[in-house]
Image (cartoon, rainbow, N blue to C red; front, side, top):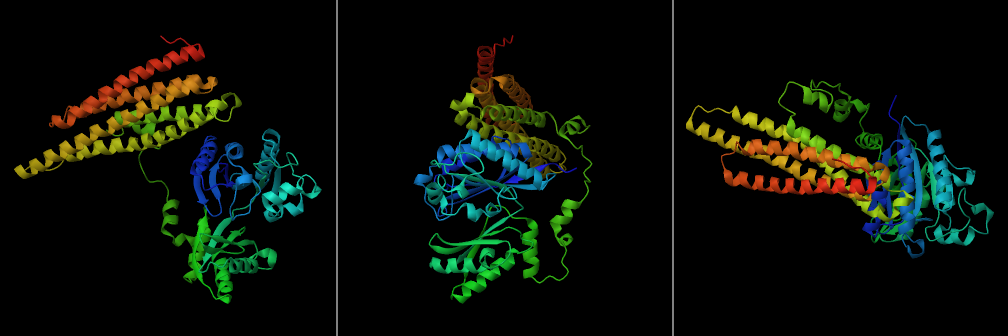
Length: 509
């Protein structure tokens, strides 16, 4: 059975303040989802974020993003060319694998009720989740934008939200729903006359009698007329059909296409279809794409399927250096867990910003330490390869000796880097123990212990390789750095134990 996977593409009414966008994305990531893409447009003053994950995590991430946006975005001060009614303007859920559309509809309605109840924001349901036929289309809900909705929501029954109050604050309202994959595609015309873009948009959009499953608006972006389109079903109206329709209509007004852009992600099938049609490839099949064949190949690698099996195998790599990096990455992962168990809890609202930063740093270190696992193995393999070089002549012996020295130096530098990153993980763990959720305080301490073990293991690998270097001017600085790291780690370990005793009431000998 495929892994349950849902995509969410929330649109936020902000692009001109990068720090606000970063804060919103950090809040989303705190739920444990994978952020795939972000697209900010200053003229639109809008940011589109794309992330995926398990249904529960995706739903929680959406709530955290909506809450953070409501805190940081004031629609009374917002201007931009793109229509909007809320700080978080629209939140669609898209089923990818192992999840039905009905389940995404349930997610949308559950989230809508929670946002209305906990955040006191008006929520409208749209597309597949809509409870009223006239609310299936987003344009109907957005009629009049924020300003128009604010004037009508309290007095017009048809504008009563599905959840939340019938009044509008500075964060506006949010539209939540479930839909099929959508392609956001913008075409820039070779003119600054926005009236032409509006005329072209009217001609190509479905609501005006144009192409099926195409929504389009004309606007001015970066001094150029833009036809902004959403293709709600690219199998009915493809990208190439849409762009050729825009080209044809624009030509009637005496202008051409300057360039186009995608907003967010696009299904590969849509681009493959566009390429095949443009190139007039008769009988083209997806199996003719090299990458498609590569991804379909069965696993032929005889190496163990997981790291622990590889570590236990009768091979010199991976070894202690890779294990050190693995332990450091585990420590970073535990710090991330503590941060995620803290962020979003009312009790820890005062430290949420700090914990978000800890989370971001821990995730970066986890990624870097994971990469270091392979780098350490590669470095040792380079040492072994250097020893196998020929040494039959004085010149060959000289080349071999230098290759061994260079490879050995690299084999010492990589575990030193692991040691540095592991101490950084310890520092984050110390902060997580001091600030984080009390229910996860032992996990924070465990993170510090894992990172401490990583440092010790890495230090052994640094020393053994340094001992084999003939150039002491290269080795002495490495040992000096290692000693500084060990001293700092010893202090951090004491600080963690002290905080563990103070906050958790745990005495550790």
